[in-house]
Length: 313
Length: 97
Image (cartoon, rainbow over all chains, first blue to last red; front, side, top):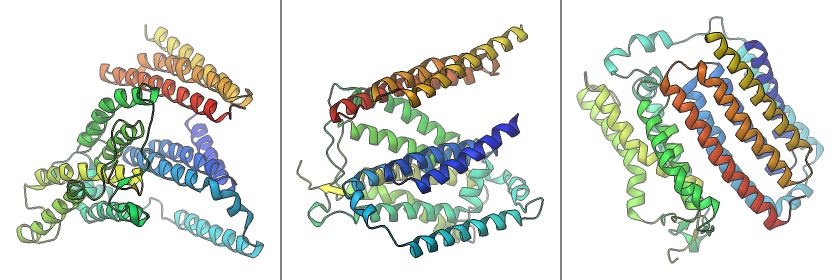
């Protein structure tokens, strides 16, 4: 029975992937991609990778999906023209061959893995004691491979700078996205009042249980950012101007704390991002608490888009 | 007792799956946006409700049961709101066909 479910899931995923590639309309392709992300998170659940499933649902399906929906909505006026200038047959053939080659190489690499696949999981579990966290994923993300997590948080800042750099000169420093004028008594405003209290609790809960159970700051921050976006789109609150100092300080606060604790590790524990004995858990908590608001703000502003309006309302 | 509960689960989840199937058929076959939404909300509300009712006897703890009920309420809230938004935007754009 479970095999049937697995096979059906895999076939659906393949069909959706093909559909996303083949669909001529950008919006249809994006819709396929979002469903693909949600199905992929089900696959991760089946593989017992709950942490990855949460991340895939929140970031792969939700956040990336929203970014792509917005991009395709902006491209809609020019889509007919773009489709008219179709690349020549050799170009398309070359693209197909190269994509096929990459897929084949990846498949070969996976198939060539020795059985059982090499794993560091036993070592990760064996050394988790002194860290004081119960979730091995969190131990990997914030102790064994803290460098990767630090770089991820910084990469998100670069993404935000990339989004902002799309602003026209006159709007630089202004408020991101359009001003939403939803009906203040409409259903969107209603849902934007009812849902955020629940969403914020769920976001903080997912962040908090990350120490001992699947969850963590990225997933929690995505949920909180989504709630913020809902409030913005319902016209209940406006996005802050990106030139505001407080916004900039909050954006960098998390990574700065992370780097500061990392540098302190050089003096106290002998290596960058190392924790002194017995201090691992409190320091991990400080990093998580500092990163969470920065991440939520960064993700929210990435989704809000490039500045389009000058500071004056 | 547990056999009766299992039977309840099977019946309720089976009925829920039937509503999902009917909703999907309606989504694919109905002619315009409004009737398609009508079909979809049946799947979301009744189908989801029956699946949750069927799952409730199977979860071990009260907390998990409460989480299931909360998920059901949230899905109802969001599906009701989203179908209103879709219907409204379909009417505004005149793209109901």
